[in-house]
Length: 268
Image (cartoon, rainbow, N blue to C red):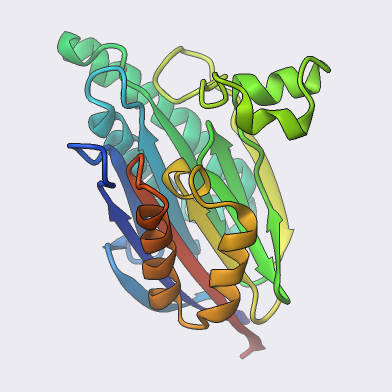
């Protein structure tokens, strides 16, 4: 039986210019259902559903963005915890279904509470197995793979700016100066149909997975993120330093970061 040790830490901060934190994150051992809000060390085996990481960024303009983020994270956790064997056999399929379930749950919440209508959230979620990780993204919260000192994006922002790049209207170098670069092309809870973008990658010992809201990758560029990850071998310190970097760069938004370190793969 293959096993992988994972060490995970997460953190969130309201930022400098926001009065309310509408981000949410979860670190979930799917075998036990245990949810952590700090640091955990766990083993994922081929006989267990795995470890789930979720970062959601509630939409700041519409009402109840924090509710949408919380409903999304909770629904994904509950659906994957209930799926069990399917998560082991087909983690990407199970994760995609759970994200669709989260979208439905937010819409149902808004129907039950009209004052919350218009709420929405980004969502980036990852399910770990001993050999790899499956990632689902809706919106612009990001996932990165940090391997051998280099940072590799596992997601691509689902925004108006990136759509314009695809159509040749903008060059990639113009995105940061585009005034509507943060306008999302899709988010959970804003319409009945949602198309999560799915990515899977094999893992190696010493790999590091980072999931973050745009409160980090907005004010802090990827070169600075990579430098911090290189200089901080412990996930707890890396999480803290990344959040501090976002605050030091002006902290324009809520910032949430989850860092997962991959230990050795063993056969028992």
